[in-house]
Structures are given as structure tokens and as C-alpha cells.
Length: 138
Image (cartoon, rainbow, N blue to C red):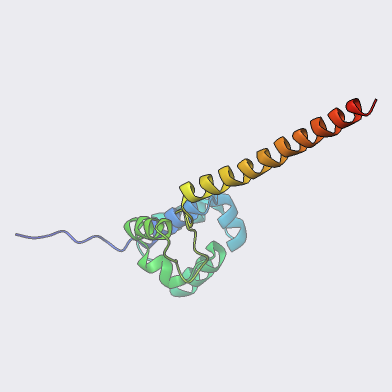
């Protein structure tokens, strides 16, 4: 029984990283000082020269190693880990979980509103008492 190994097709990896970055072939070509057709051929190539790979990596905003080791499975794992509060390359953590108990906040808001209501009722009682006192003095 033989198992097929995935090829390390650098051109496809470059294309996918470029797409994920929202970059068109024309933009990459312009940044590299080559034609769009050359970028197309480059993305179809299984291997790329080290020096050229370094330039491409710089334009894409990644390292040469990122391109060489790129896998979409790893990207999705990183996204999932980031969503769960982990960090990617020591970047900022995005925490999508509550850091407080919503019920506690609801009770707190209720208590504040209750105090406000009680103050308003007391102010109205004071007004009524004042008006009654003025009315009785006449």
C-alpha cells in the first residue's frame, strides 16, 4: 500500500497567499518589476529560486519560510486558535468571550434604575408636600 505525499508546489502557495492578502497578479508583478504573465508562470512553477522567493515573500509581507511551509489547514487552525483566544505569532489576542456575567450587569442596572426611581418618587412627594403647605398657608 502506498500513500501519496503532497507536493511542495511553491507557485500554488504563492498564489494562495497572494489571494488571501487580496492582491492581484498585476499588483504583485508591479511590485516585483515583472509582467503579469511572468507572475502567472511563476505561480504555475513547482519551484522558485531562493533569491526570487525572498523578494516575493517581502512583497507579500511574509517570510520565505512562511511560503515554503504554507498550508491552508494550518491557516484554518490558526484562525480557530485565534478565535478561541490564543495568539498567532505573539500578535494581539481577540477575545470573543464575555469577561463578565451578563446577569450581574442586568442586576446592577436594575438596582441603579430602582434607586433613580426612588429618588424621583421622593422628589415628587416633596413637591406635593411643598404645594400642600403653600395651599394651607393661604
